[in-house]
Image (cartoon, rainbow over all chains, first blue to last red; front, side, top):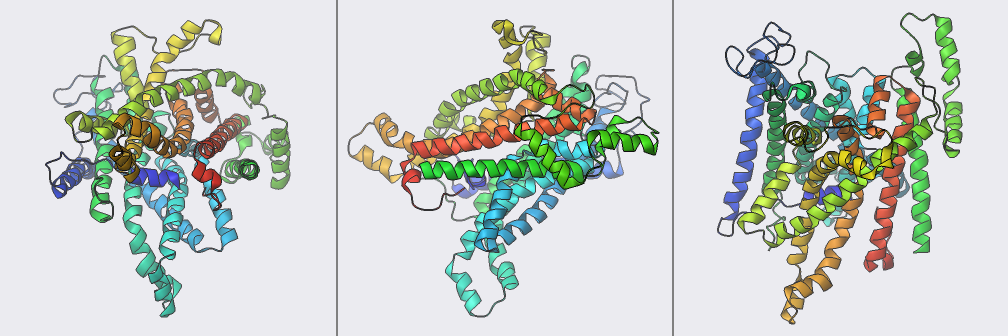
Length: 292
Length: 321
């Protein structure tokens, strides 16, 4: 339980002494929302309009920024801005898909383990510990190895690996809530277990869980970029930021934009998500007051 | 302690068996027949059958699993489909690069992160405290391979002071040469690792700084340094140790990606090549060895934690995993 708690418990926000707390909190959230918002808008726009077709190789190779290619072209003459915009879509899809998959499986498994009898709980916990020892990236490589590399295989792999982490956190949180008196009271007054879960357990564990899921979103984006960099992500002509970086690596001096831009966008998205998680933690969890 | 050691060892062994089972099942249950990687396009059914027989995938699953476990027990990881060389010795040869890379990065990350994290917490309300926190926030959002690419660009291609990649053919015969090739990869991994480590150290330090026992000690006349040394350090180090175990494990894995950036002949390079060639024994072997390393690190971290924290040692409660 140490990992998640440490992750969730790592405080990152400390305004200056004179700044009132609610101001610094909203700053964190606002910056996070702006950063993520920019990426989301770019991704949405890319659904309807991109400057060039993604597979259009008519441009000259490795052109510097200018007209008509605003950010220049890559080594095959494709428009960099177009690729970056489509990459935003892929990064968001990877993050959202993995979190959705990992969240649904992880929370269900964690709830089951939290309610289970002791020996079953022990077995599930041990299994989860082992799955967690099985690192995300290696698991993702395993899935990618047996299937053709694609965005879906990357999402499935990252989501599965994530589900073990989410499940372990959920289990700990559920156990903690179930030990409370109001659960006993609710049960005594005749509430069924499913209703207890929906009305009492989930609302109580959700704040911590959602912060963790937001952090996992950022980790999933990074994992997808790594997989794509290694050639195990979305295949061409889909432009994943990770693969763009890999392709641009050799021509860093001729076309530095190709090496800088995708990396900067990854950092912007991940920092944005992390800031939202930090800000949301303070809003959602009133017990986590600022350290003395 | 002995009872705990026995229980923890039993858990380690069971974990390893389960990990082997998970690995085996994942590779077998996912679509795609390992035999296909032995064959060229348009192989006849007879050839497919022969290939299956050759690598044993025509036998029932339990039988395959037991024979694989038997192999593992004798440290036999099978032979590569592609090169037909045994996988075990090749992994051992590759570890000569990966293990030093991991350990050096880890040590560097700890050496950087502990003082920085402490200052970031102690001086949280100053401008440089905020900057340190901000930088660590940035550090956990950066893809490790991108850091490697940028470092290569600056130090190898522009300044030409360090090699961009590769490793001496004769491994560590010339330690200075080997260390030079590892410099940039080590800095890359350490930079990213220290960012997340700084956050944990900072968090642990903040807990200690706000504690009643530290205030009491100061009220009784200890200097800040003495109170930190006698009371603060011992308390702060416990959560950090458990994180260190996890960090060491993820350093080992971060190395896998970084090795590709720097074209190092380590475990990572071998794995990526094995994946590209669908070389199942290689993939299976590397994943098993990696899991083994990660589990053993967790085992050691738990023991160290017990040794330094008397509360854990003496508690009668069930050990919280």
